[in-house]
Image (cartoon, rainbow, N blue to C red; front, side, top):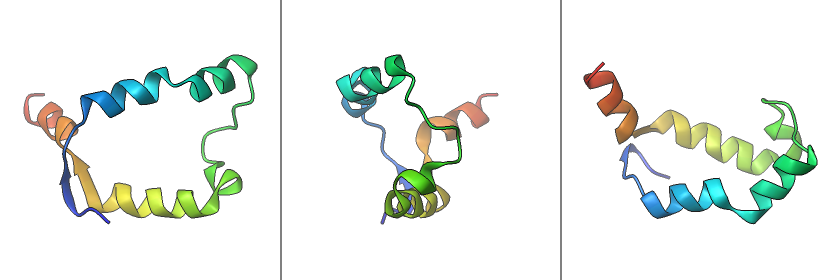
Length: 67
């Protein structure tokens, strides 16, 4: 588990936004409402909940700093 500041990865960011799986789900309209991740995959939901509370994105820190 990561604690502290996350290092940004441009390649992972682009892959996540242009993945085939994401495009299929988005165009087919099979999306679940926000907040229903615990129904789809409870283990991933719990991991992401802890990860997002214990780590900080460096880009969000920069946005707050220069706002």
